[in-house]
Length: 361
Image 1: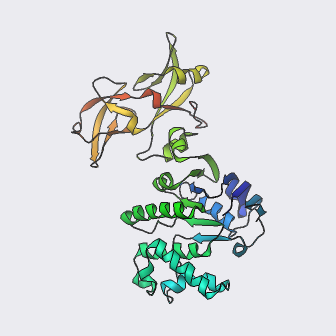
Image 2 (image 1 turned 90 degrees about the vertical axis):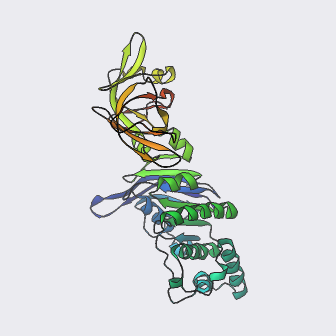
Image 3 (image 1 turned 120 degrees about the vertical axis):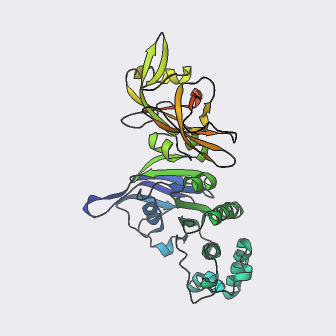
C-alpha cells in the first residue's frame, strides 16, 4: 500500500470554471479517507484527478514517493470501484473478477488463487458461475469490489459505490466495506455525498464545497468542532440549528441576543467573543443539545413531531426561527403546545455572519 499526497491541486475547465481549487491533503498508508460534499462540489473530480482520468491544471499528486501528474491511469497501481458496477454482461462472476489479471498476463494459477480468496472474503464463492443479470444489486457491487481486490493495488478509489443500492442494502454494504478495510488495511479514498457513510467509514474526512476544502478532520472532530457554518450544517442529521443575533455585554456578563431570546454565554466562550460585542453573529446548536423542560432560554411552539422509535424529533418555531429538537422516546408535547427549551450552552457554536468562520473553537 502507499500514501497519497495532493499539493495545491487545481482543476480549471474551459471558460475558467474551477472544478477543484488548491486541494492539499495527505491520505496515510492504510488510512480510509472519505471525500465528502454536496453534488457538484468537486469531490468526484478530485478522485478522478488522483486516478488520472482528468488532467490537473496545476499542483502535484504523489502516490507513495512517485509523482504521478503525467502517469497514465493504468500505471498508477490503483483500483477503482464506480457507482455503476461496470460488469461485463456476457462473462460470469469468475471471469469478471479475473479479466483485469488476465490482461496483465498474471499466471493462471495465481489468478485462480486470488479470485477464490476474494470471493470467499466477500461471501460470493457460490456465485462464481452466474452472469451479472442473475445477481442482485448488492451481489453485483460485491463482484465489483472483488474485481478491485484481486488487483492488489497500492490504492483503492471508490466513487459513490453504494448510491444505487436500497437503504437496507446500503447499511449492510457499509458494514461490509468497514470489515474489508480492517482486513485488508488498504489505503482507500472514498467519495460520497452521504455524511452518514462518511461518519461511519472514515478515519479522515475531507469536506469540500464549491471546489474548495472546508475542513480536514476525523469524523468526531468535524462533528464537535466544525470549522465553519457550512461544515456545521452539513455534518449531522438532523442538521445543526442556527439562530441569527448579536453578542452583547450586560452587567459584566456576555450574552447572545436574538429577536426571540437571550442566552448567557459560558465563561470560556465569552472570552473568545470579548471583542465581538454588537457584531452580528449566528448561534449554532445541535438538536440533541436542547431539552424541553420547565424553564429555558427559548419559548417555542410545537409544529409537529416525528416518532422514530429510538428517538422523537420535535419541529419547533418562534416568531422568527424554526428549529429541531431531539428527545428521548417518551410522550411528546402535542402539536400547537407552547414549550420552554433549555440550551446546553457549553455545546453551542458562534459563527461569523459574513465568513461563516467558527469563532468559538
